[in-house]
Structure formats: C-alpha cells, structure tokens
Image 1 (cartoon, helix red, strand yellow):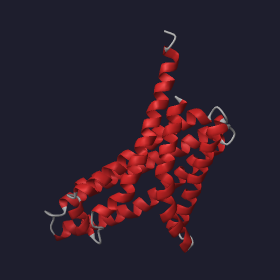
Image 2 (cartoon, one colour):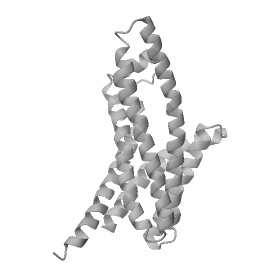
Image 3 (spheres, helix red, strand yellow):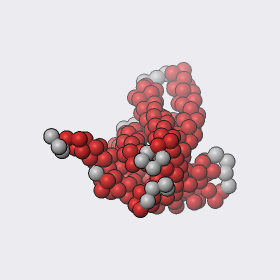
Image 4 (cartoon, helix red, strand yellow):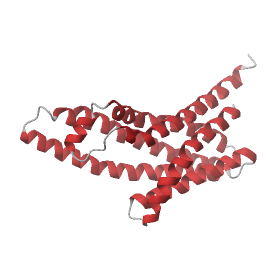
Length: 227
C-alpha cells in the first residue's frame, strides 16, 4: 500500500520519457523520409505517391508525431509547474495548440486528400479531375495557414516551459535553456517560411537536424531519471 501513491507518478514520467525518445525517432523519419521517394511536381505525381510505401510511412509518422511530443510535454509541465505554475500552464497550452493543429493537418492530408480526393483521380472524368485539382490546391493553401498556427503554438510552448524551468536549478534549469534553444529555432523557421531574410532558411536547414532529435532524446532521458 505504501508504494501505491508513488507508482502512478513514476509511471507517468516514464511514459512521457518513452514518448519523448520515440519522438526523436519520428523526427528523424520526418527529416530523412523525403530522400526515399520522388518529390511531386504536380497532382499526378501526388496520386502516384499514395502507393509509395516510404511516402505512406512518413505520412503516418507525421500524424503520430504530435501525440508523442505532447505526451512528453505533459511530463515537462509536471516538473516546470513546481517552479512557476503560471508559465508552465501557458507552455503546455501552447503545446496543446501545436499538437492539435499538426494532428488535424496530417489527418486532413492523409484522409481527405489521400484516401478520398487523390484516390478518386484515376477513375474520374475531366470535370471530376478539375474538381479534385481545385480541392487539392485549396487544401495546400489551408495547410500553410495551419502550419503558421502550429508553429505559433510550438514557439510559445517551448518558450514558456523553458522560462518556467529557468527558475529551477541544476539539470532542470539546463533543460530550460534547451527548450529556449528550440523556441529560437522556431523563430528562425518563422522567418524562413514567411518572408524573412535568406539566411534564415540556411540556418534552419542546419540547426533543425542538429537540435531537434537530440533535444527530444535528452528530454526523454531527463524525464526517465525524474521518475
């Protein structure tokens, strides 16, 4: 009976830790996946990609990824709230916005676009194909808008959780700095994707693969030790 009160908190930290470590793997899949299939130049190329196993692996990994990262963020929140519960709440709320938006974005891409519109392309007549092309073009415009929103949530989530952990000591404080580095990377990504200077794209291309997988793995190890 005496072990029961601590068993659940430890299990929660361990689940968050495993989720963070797995998210390091999914991040790598998202980064290197495009090297294994041809990049589409038109809608017929997108139709062909639906049967490519590497494309499908990356597409569904993209859907699973935000669930893993949000589970890890809940573990970080449990630590950060001990130092500043207000900043920690803002941080986990930012991650919730990011995770929901990215999961929604990928669900629409995989199901609405992949399973419905593009799957209907081979059997469609000229009018049907025109409608599919219009719907697909409209979706990718919406995709950009959803990306802007999810990137905002990701920036705020890392920023506020990082600031909360800066009020801690030792390794917890070091994790705070790590989260702030990821938040800075989100700012650079914003600049690269939405009219910023040319150097932002070059910095993001180098910094993202150098920081993101390692950060997720290190946070997973930290959460496991926290258990």
